[in-house]
Length: 235
Image (cartoon, rainbow, N blue to C red; front, side):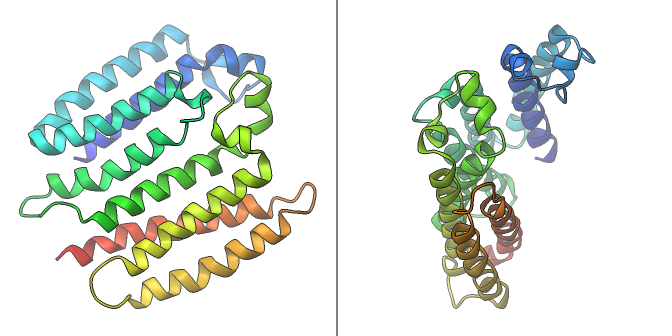
């Protein structure tokens, strides 16, 4: 399971670097190995294809159903790289891939039932929020090179608000979704993220403020920790 996820993520990252190599050059992204000349583009493409082939084999070794779920998640991410990132549907692959990931993990675990709806929904919300948060640092460069996904079209302030709102919703689902009363960790997550999100959005009105992006990162970390620890609620 771990190896399947690793190879899938490598294929997604490397394919993105290869597909965006000219755009990254125009944006002056010298932090990218392909742009700096540290790695030849053909090497990156070959590595991406080898990784995705390994991902297919390793995913199917976990079983037909979990393997299909994981490969659907990886395919969704590749579709984003191949062009959906520049359309109004740019958040969709993040919702699909992040929602399918916990479903894959649960399905591949011996003796486990299907992933509950609240866990899949939380993953989808977390992924969509992460998409909008990921747009913020590179928004200007992306617009200059022709990338106009939904977050870019919304603008910086609305994009930050969408990221925070979706991540807060993910925290809420993770805290309140499992059967039974919320755990101490769930209440703590809500008490941390609600004021952080509100403060970040309030200070985002100040020109040049990074408060919104910082608050989004804090909420994302809390959401991920809550998602991982919520696995114990499946017993």
